[in-house]
Length: 158
Image (cartoon, rainbow, N blue to C red):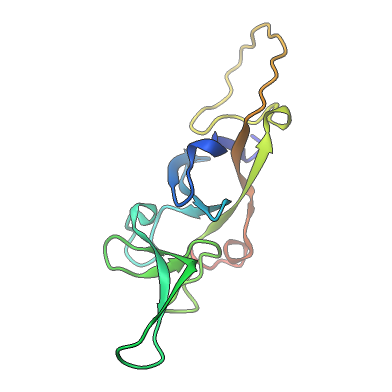
């Protein structure tokens, strides 16, 4: 297996949307934030909640009581059980710098570059059928489990 999986057409994950998939024996959430796609493990490091089912909210800061700044450029994923917040783009927590969600590289690629990349949840079988060439012009979202981001490689967020 290559470690790369087609999970959806880019057009099927609208701005602010997500898709939950199982790839390589892992549940992964793929999020569209500002037209960029990010992959996160679907397991909260605190108590194991289905993290990717939580709300995505903007950042909120306050210099003093009664005043706040709303940052729509920040996308925070809130744990549905306890409200812990993680940056969708990096997996970094907003309550403990040692705690992270495992992130996965996600790319948007053309159909012409998908030969041999399995669809999420499917395993290639031993048989092949005669095929004919087909041209598809849509773009697809591909999760690459071989390229877990730096936090996962250092053992954080497991």
